[in-house]
Length: 462
Image (cartoon, rainbow, N blue to C red):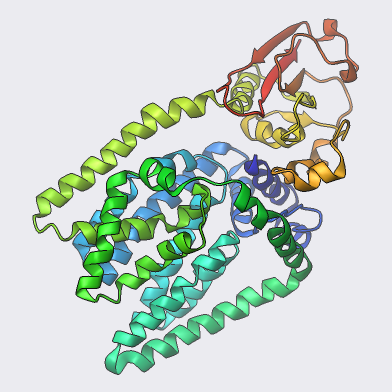
């Protein structure tokens, strides 16, 4: 459901342009607790290449692949090429990541930009010059990718401290370059922050009063994340690497250990929230595997881990994801595209149980269809304010219909699409239409029978 917010923000930029997006983000564009950088990039893709999901998936796939390369480069910069190559290979050993790459979310891009920030900061300390500006730019993008990156960017302080401690005659040089990066970053980050101060202050209030307590109520165990979502051999090698680094008194290891320590110390137990530290996890695991002197054995272990993860992703994760009820939005969109339906009314029926406001599914349907959607937002039958205030999916109830869906709802439509939590068979009464106007219908009711919120789609057409 989070993808609906990012799609909506991106579509606003596509339709109204960059200046309007910059001015209205947090006002006309509901920001909830989202940062603007990734929706901004998605919007540029829509504006210059077209509103097609394929381009978004190409973009996120490129960023995932880029993270593999950056992980290799960080490993090579800190230690050697063999360690970097093994770390890049091990990043392919996390089946959970494969399920995130195709989604229009911000987690994989945030992982990329945080990893890019680490690498360019390392280069800025070593080389200075233009790398100082480049490092500040990518830290800026990472900062405005996701709120949780703020905490993760503290690794840059650890990097500067490690470089200064081992710098010898270059210590002053490292410190001056690090301060220069910090000054340039503070200037550009601060400019945006003060320009949107009202939005950011409201978001931070929500994070403290709503999101933070929610983390304590809803999480996953570290056992699930590190021994199921991640190949257990990666976790085992990373744990062993702590002993190896301590024995060697290797200060550079603190750079990769820092983010892992933050996750454990703060008990961050949602897999999605710690995706961005996975490159550091595999760097730690590669450090542990480097204690095996035989390169052929190390390579075999790395390839086996990656191959196993790909098999799990294809034959366990993918079949389950194809059965999740929200996939019906994709299947209905493909059907609408195949029949050439260009104009449609969309109706959302209030579910029998109320975990999610179904109106939030409309942008997801829009993502998967080339047709024009008419959706009149009617907040009927909503739960009371107290229920909404404490709902784990509160943002869906505070959702407001984007203006572009109701801009042109005149005239007869080619189809009526009903999104509900139960299979349809007749048009709902509030549609104000007669069945003889739309004598045919197709029902999309795939379900995993796990989640309370079900998204079933019925398309009525002539």
